[in-house]
Image (cartoon, rainbow, N blue to C red; front, side, top):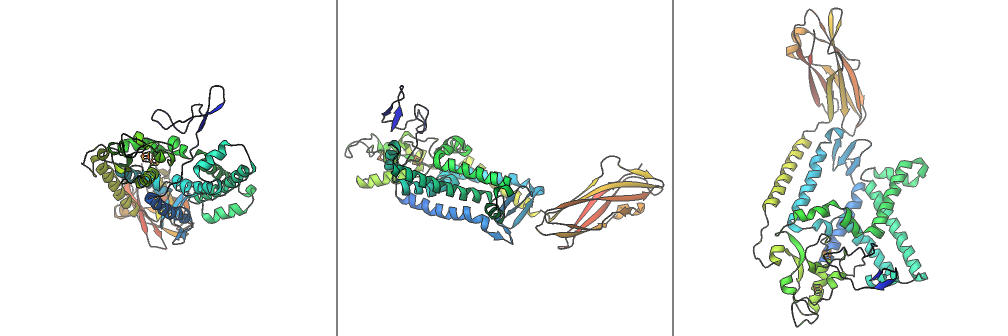
Amino acid sequence: MTESDKTGKRRATTRRPDLDTVYTIKSDGSRNMIHPADVKGRWQLRKEIIWAILVVIYIGIPWVRIGGRPAMLIDLPARHAFLFGNTFTNQDFYLVFFIISGIGFSLFVATALWGRVWCGYACPQTVFLEGWFRKIERLIEGRGEARIRRNQGPMTFDKFWRKTLKHLIFLCFSFWIAHTFLSYFIPVQKILTVIMSSPAAHPTAFFWSMFWTAALYFDYAWFREQLCLIICPYGRLQSTLIDQDTVVIGYDENRGEPRTKQAAEGGDCIDCFRCVAVCPTGIDIRNGQQMECIGCANCIDACDDIMAKVGKPGGLVRYDTQRSFSGEARRRLFRPKVIAYLVLFVIGGIVFSAAAGRRTPVEVQLLRQKGMPFVLEEDKIRNLYNLHIQNKTGEDRVYFIEPRPGKEAEPFDPEYVTPIKRLEIDSFDDKSIPVFVFVERKKYSDYFPLGIAVTDSATGYEKLMKLKFRGP
Ligand code: SF4
Ligand code: SF4
């Protein structure tokens, strides 16, 4: 690599990753762009299969419909969401806590057991960067070493057309991924309409579409591993979740050291730097566990390949626990923290299932009108309530409002006056109507409970609302 000296001149250096500096930043503060070498092996094959499945899932879900509704859509302006055949409205917002904490605890369990397995195998950042963008880059600009050489050389026609073509394709893919991301929040048919129409017709949608396209292009074309190192909060969390019994990717120091170029002498590590050359974050796994390691397993395949070439068994760099790497035979899968995360995950899952199962297709609220609790009108006492009905289903519904005073109210003979007894409400819409209740003054002695029933005509679902009648 080259770096600028104090006079600004470029000079060749043989800087190696260490624990004291961030390898992706040069001493002059500029970016040291990583161009990982190509690698093949069993972990690469597994990742390719997993990424192919995940790409189909990530891109395909917005197109899937269950019961005529999108399989997954969080429609923020309309304040409702569809999740695999279930409909949630703003009234169900508290369930988001259980969904987010459930995802969090399952990630905690996975990290405590297998380290940054999410980062290396399933995070969309890795899936699209390694699965699409780096492949396109290799196809157009060649292998890592060729790219570094070309980048350091002058601008030629060959360099120009390769860079232009690469960035044009990057822009197209960023546009596609951005709109796939947006289609989790805006129905996919609406997105297609927006794409086909003039930006002036949908300025807000156009702004977000361009914003996310630009953000993803910036990320996948340039920012890359910096997102994992600087921005991602999960990366910062991992050190608190990983312990001596977590299966991580590591280097077997007992077997590898002392490292030497002579395979017949010293340890098994021949100091070939192949594990460093393939690392997408530019670290040397032989320096021990580092925050920059995203658990991609490139170094395992690279080292296994070298070991095969020098006639030694693979596994010098491998998945194992810190305890095993330091020579201890004991392994503990279920530690207190793993059990605690699992218990919290299960409790959250049970509460979520119970709460989600108790959701009703209609939300009804009967509240006393603000201000005076009652009004005296000649020989009558009047109470005024506000009946609010929200249709939480995806279909238009008709609701019937019916007085149900109940036994305790019988002696007072309350008279209900509602302007509407039949209420039509569009899907996910809501309406409010006033409800007047009158009781003759001579019949009133003390406050008493009374009710009003709201019935969904389509399903027969009925909700009986109770309130107290008050008087002087
Ligand atoms: S050290 Fe190995 S597993 Fe970690 S990021 Fe680098 S190549 Fe991937
Ligand atoms: S690839 Fe294996 S042998 Fe080569 S430097 Fe890395 S650990 Fe040592």
